[in-house]
Length: 121
Ligand SMILES: NC(=O)c1ccc[n+]([C@@H]2O[C@H](COP(=O)([O-])OP(=O)(O)OC[C@H]3O[C@@H](n4cnc5c(N)ncnc54)[C@H](OP(=O)(O)O)[C@@H]3O)[C@@H](O)[C@H]2O)c1
Image (tube, rainbow, N blue to C red; front, side, top):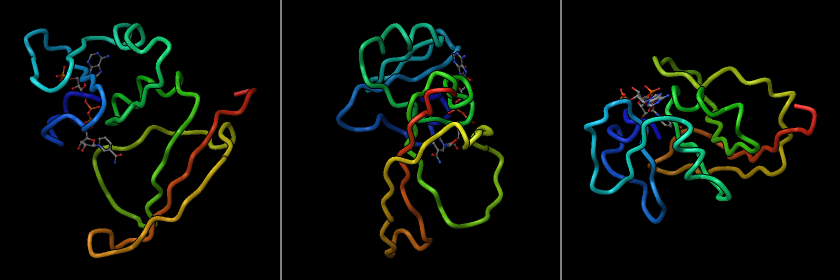
């Protein structure tokens, strides 16, 4: 994840190794490994399944390397200043979907989609 996403969460995601990207060579974290460029991430990630968890800058940086997407689709129109990069959905095949549960914490309809990149893409 990017440094801004880490700071918006305020801590590492539990039960997994977390990598946080920043250009600041003095940045350090107690609960995550700090890395400084894409090549370093790819080296650490070799032979491992890695999830890119955003935000927008980091999605943009890695999108062309991804072979699968896990997307939460929220059925709402909303504004914002941080936007997932443009995606050509023709290049992705939906292989599984699951409806989200509406409750007091999640008042909007939403669903999870798992996508694989098509062979030609
Ligand atoms: N809805 C979702 O699924 C989702 C997921 C994740 C995040 N978010 C939200 O997205 C927002 C943050 O997104 P964002 O796009 O503003 O920031 P971001 O992608 O989280 O982080 C950007 C930072 O990453 C570092 N970085 C970017 N490219 C780099 C590179 N090539 N090499 C080294 N470091 C690099 C820089 O850190 P330095 O400035 O420290 O150098 C940059 O400022 C937050 O509000 C978060 O809550 C939403």
